[in-house]
Length: 395
Image 1: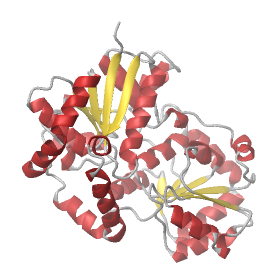
Image 2 (image 1 turned 180 degrees about the vertical axis):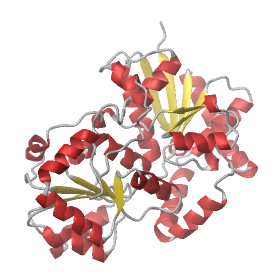
Image 3 (image 1 turned 30 degrees about the vertical axis):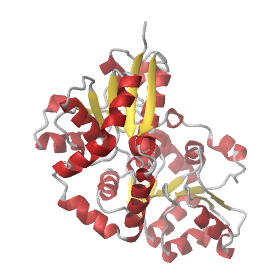
């Protein structure tokens, strides 16, 4: 019998969209190996000449003009991509996208970015007969995600579902699945053993993630971070920004045995388990991975728009705080004085009825008619009715 096939289309704006696609694909394959998954970044795969240029321009704009990004997000918030944009995408991607779909013959297409969602929607309008799901990878829903041809929206929370239904999308077309995370984030490993494995000291530890492009924060926060290096271990994970990594490694302020500076890492799951506090930008994927690991979070420099909404959501639940020097000092004091109680709180936040990182993959399998058969599927497919409850982290 032919195996079911799922084709996941993403786009490389940041790391979260493609990360969500791979996370869902790996989750599906782990829960049911009889389902085949393929992840493709539409622009990079189908137009490798133009895509890097567009991505570079977007990156420069986010870094140098975040207020412009926020203004564009807000002014277009309730609007789908306009007709000219959709026509341009159609011209660029139509033939190649149709050929890929014809070759792979998927039973289901899932898009984790608005651009491929718009392209596949247009193909469906012209006769493509494959179900199209859109997976929204943040804790908000910009109008650009919305297309009439989408068969189902997979969303992070009931709040996001309410936003979509408020725009006229029938409730039965929207399913609250949570944002998928890679199976490496489904379980937690022993902190002490991991620290030994990773060559870390067994002392209070902070993981500081600079985002997929290695973005960084100001001098006052850095001063607070480095004020207690004899008592607290700092792990700086700066993504793909090799220049920043090199600059930080040569900075005398950071020349200390309890400071580790690394670039891109495939072991973020282990680093989160080995750490007691996560400092990060509030990207949808990173927030969800942190939630899955039960680690308290401090957010800095949210990009205006969806990251602001992500930040607002987790702060309102008491799962995170906004970073400043005073907040850093408060948490560092707690980490030194209350190690045992903080660890107990973290264990309670990992209770299976509070967050189910397998739920998205299990739900997609159910919709395919191929239910989960591995790794205690009952836990993965159980209702998420309590997913928005929280144990307050703020001191």
